Image (cartoon, rainbow, N blue to C red; front, side, top):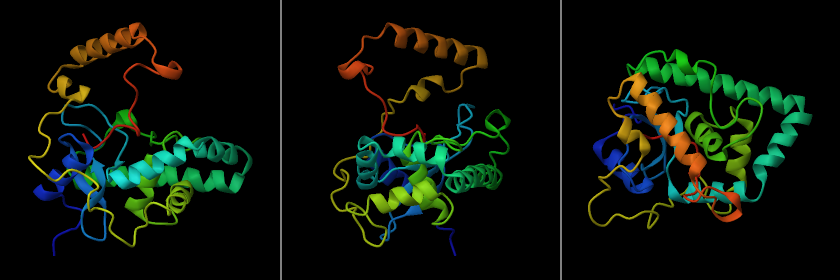
Length: 234
């Protein structure tokens, strides 16, 4: 029997349509809809261009990402972080979720042939283990490993029940299925494929200079905005 985590060509096309760009470095499907479509892409801990990448579980389904964004906009991350500071039991469970994230990422690296990535040893994602920086990451973790592991990811899933629940399919009309799948990757990582460490560092310095010179947009945000969740599914 085929491992349901193994991504098929159809899965990769669906992920590209969900995200609006071609995906790469997806090594597994972390969670699926009841209909079989991907909900979470599992990203290699080291990208194809050699860059270490700590964000393992990337939430891709547009209905879920939109629902989680509503929670973030409502201030849920700040409230969760404050609770972590005053609730030792919750803080301990969240730290255990952090350790689980690291353990599972190492297992994925071994299982898929990527191997250890020492540059990100001890670094998880989403703000773990002491704060909440990205609910999308926590929800992706909860969907991938199941309930009872990441308490705040589980809470966020409960919080989006008005818009999405795991017992039914919300795929119809959730992304564009007409025409060819996205083929042009606009990610900045595309431009760093195959570069040496020195060239990569030069690219990073160039981006930092550009960010410092970029005019602020509305509410003081960068003019071009920011992604909804930590980057992944490269």
